Amino acid sequence: MADITQENILAALKTVKDGDIDIVSKNMVSGVQIKDGHVAFAIEVATERGPQLEPLRREAEKVVHALPGVISATVVLTAEKQAGAGNGGGGGNEGGGPQPNQAMPQAAKGGPGGPGAGAPKEDFLPNVKAIVAVASGKGGVGKSTTAVNLALAMSALGNKVGLLDADIYGPSIPRMLGISGKPTSSDGKSLDAKENFGIKAMSMGLLVEEDDPVIWRGPMAQSALIQMIRDINWGELDVLVVDMPPGTGDIHLSLAQQVPLTGAVIVTTPQDIALADARKGLNMFRKVEVPVFGIIENMSYFLCPHCGGRSNIFSADGGVEEAKRMDTDLLGQIPLDIVIRETSDSGEPIVASQPDSEHAKAYKAIAEIICAKVAYALVDDNNAAPNIVMQ
Image (cartoon, rainbow, N blue to C red; front, top):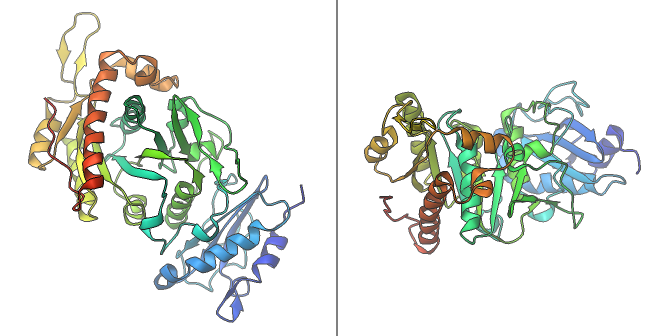
């Protein structure tokens, strides 16, 4: 494999012009990273110009990808500082601009259909029928565990399902699904999603070492995530489940604005603090006009394995009351159980490893409701979900 150097990359980028001047001479290139044939960097632009510069981003990506030895090129637009105030390349982890860690996302080049500002929603993942976000207002409520088991439950219902781990900074899906190793490319253009238990998955955790932190500023993380979604070979999917990061930050807004979400599901625990944050998450989706399918109350209660007694550790029926208050559906209640934790930690999720258990049945019942709402949303002109109440 030919050696790839920052000098070669910058020389190639001098052919990419913004107006009459190339982007290197205008100090627009920053954060150049090279690892095992994979190249990533940012192009710094003024905020107001971002939506118009997608063709420039694609051209820069194409030019670098064409260099000998380059396997993939990941280019993002960032408005961290005014264009022209860059550091002339910012090689390695030195200089200004967004600085990712050494292991960059190894997505293949986007080409003419690449993502980014200005990419139309209509042609986003044309082979994926529906995209459902699983979100929470705060961390620690079991959102990722819920997302994994819901994806498996939807697959068990006969759907072709994909699972995207959108938590850039704390990816956990690879461990829960028992998958590892860097993704490969069957066509030399896009990475193939990993597969286990009959579902396809992609995560930043597959693109970096498990113990390596992802040290990115917000705009670069947002753009890289959108590109990671779109430049993955998902194949034909009925549903792509997106395990959202906790909270209601920039990544949530980027996904809601650039990805055609069919609907969202909010995961919470019953206590007041979690419910207050879940309320914020629900309202965020409503403000960006993404249908909210309902609330899942996780860790709803604890059944003692010795005496069979029920304890409401995190309060009782908080999710039930919150669903009524927010005028949405309670999709289901999942108990707090050591088996769910053990199977998730071991990479054998309970829906896959114990499909006939009561817990797996609870996930499947919720999945049936969500699938019905998805089907309705896909045919309804107003994208409104029906009022389905779990008895």
